[in-house]
Image (cartoon, rainbow, N blue to C red; front, top):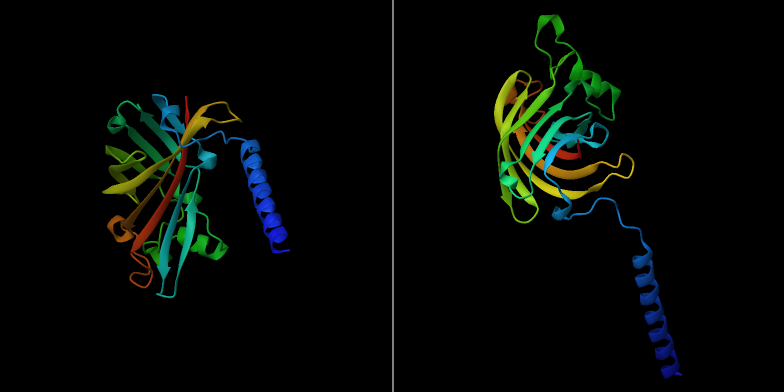
Amino acid sequence: MRKIILSTIAAATISTGAIVTLHAQDAPQLPGQMDASRVTAGTYTADAGHSLIGWRVNHFGFNDYFGIFGDVAGTLTIDPANPAAAKVDVTVPIANVVTASDGLTAHMLRPGADGKAPDFFGAAPAPARFVSTSVQPTGSTGATINGDLTLNGVTRPVTIAAEFTGAGANPMSQKATVGFEGTTTIRRSDFGVNGALPVVSDEVELDITIAFEKQ
């Protein structure tokens, strides 16, 4: 009886493995693959509909809250034979900030009271702009991107830790597309955004995900 049970378990295990293998073989390949050989030299434009900058701050020491900037515009010039020569120039419309709370979004964009400075960005903030000054490849898929960030009328150096995440042809536009993710932390007081300091954290974590389409 024990032999019969063991044989049944073994047969079931083999069958399950075969099914998993078949499913893996049948699964469609994603258009974008983490394969640097798919990247071709040239100038690419940000896919505004699929590029986002997430931000995160601590609130009163209780918890973090976060939001998103969308509609990123800009260009990437890249040559896979010389990645250190890559250049990035992107613009982020601060006025398009989104949070899960209408009240919080309005607070970030409302003008200052009685002629005072706004708590955060004000009613008609200028777009932010990041322009790279150097790119240092790290490992097989990463890069340290140094550049100048202009935000709230102030320009400061910022360093982004970036990772290549995929390349291929976009099935909708048929354009060659490359994707990257990146992270950095800035101090908002460096850019004159001083509202609610220090009970709302000065440090702002930025989480970047961006796709570029070749022109």
